[in-house]
Length: 239
View 1 (cartoon, rainbow, N blue to C red):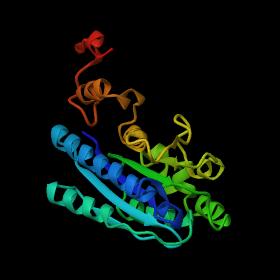
View 2: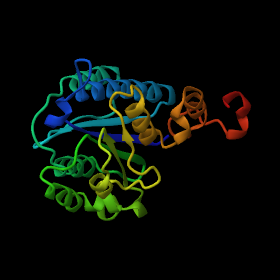
View 3: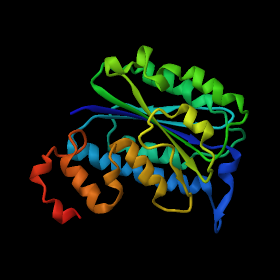
């Protein structure tokens, strides 16, 4: 089964520190759903015996990268602790995550036998605005699936941008290369919206958006799941 490499670029700019419900900030709500995603990836990894590499890239005016190759249960604990430890700082520089993504996917090169995914999560427009154009330049080969990341070599990176509480997708559309889902706009106070959008990115099937369909996907998906044929499944039971 195909190895998976996933980079999650998480906006930690000042606006993510805004209180959006009770005393809870937007970043805290994003963290909660990202931790749930990591747990679900780990379940699927073990059930399907798929090797998984994960990178977390917190970004604001600056950026940093932490990664784990061929994750195990101990790594998952560390990844969740890292996510929970993310803190707020100024700026929303879109270019930073693409510097790190170029490095991580480029040096941990895809030989055509791995599925590469980048999930770009933000709650704001780029600041400075010019950083969106810089990101397009830095991430050109990834975004256009050319050069080192050419689709013809099965080395492309699927880039899913997700907007949290911001309806303007003009800038995130510039760096998203998965037009089949657009750029989802999710509410931070919806306890499953970000989870569902990220799950769509890593699983690649919109039918996995409710519990019954998640079970079906786990049974039939050839990468993550058990690989059963559609004809083996009683579809009536999942409707």
